[in-house]
Amino acid sequence: MYKKNVALSEPHAACGFHCIKTKDITVKIGNVTIIENVNLHIHCGRLTAIIGRNGAGKSTLMKAILGEIKHEGTITFEDIKNNQMEDLEVGYVPQHLNIAKNTPTSVYDLFASYISNSPVCLFKNKKLSEQIKKQLTIFQAQDLMDKQVCDLSGGELQRVLLSIAITPVPNLLLLDEPISGIDRNGMELFYENIGNLKKNFDLAIIMISHDFDFVRKYADHVILLDKTIKIEGTPDEVLSSEEFKDTFGMQWE
Image (cartoon, rainbow, N blue to C red; front, side, top):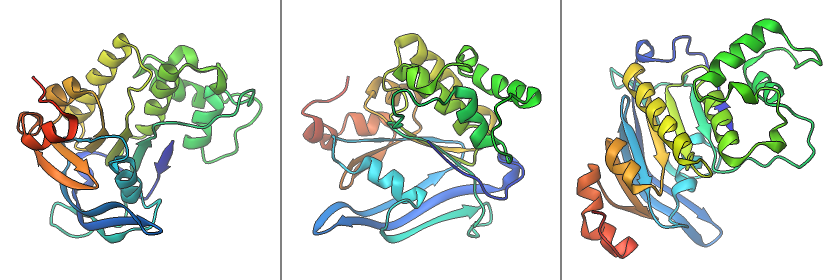
């Protein structure tokens, strides 16, 4: 789980963040090309879904945007005047979080370590506890605050990570298959909250997903990736395309 905290005091429409542009993004590991010449133009206030087969480079592209891996090409964040922004707040929920069994870390400890500037003490800070509980409530995870992170189910952990990732509400939210391990009720709650985030805050959301029903219902823009962009457009355009059929061996009805 990742938070890139920078000096924007109002992480919503007032911050002036406008769009993300990538030009010719290429990632190679040794002689193997993972993604090649990826060009994106992603606006705030939109949910962009990235789809593709396993190994298509989806998570690699997300890590390149985060600056976690070396890449060729450029990634720029622009304000409403098309000037490059250096200060940005990014929330990121990974596909997996490696927590060793029997690690004595509670949800409170994990959350507090990300949002507090002071060390997490043995005794809870009442004000901080109230803040954490309020944020966990967004994804109905408030009852998990005292549980050990290593004891959480997949769905419970994802709800906690989502709560952390939007504290405070970022300019850019990156979600790497965040509904993995979440039951149907949890998925509906997730979709509802993502919709509210998009509606009430002018943030860009990029989400890797294999749930094509979700993509059709909630995404504004869809990118089909297979090392490079095969096609992009509205959900209906992409899911009914020949490129989608060639990739997945079917068309989504």
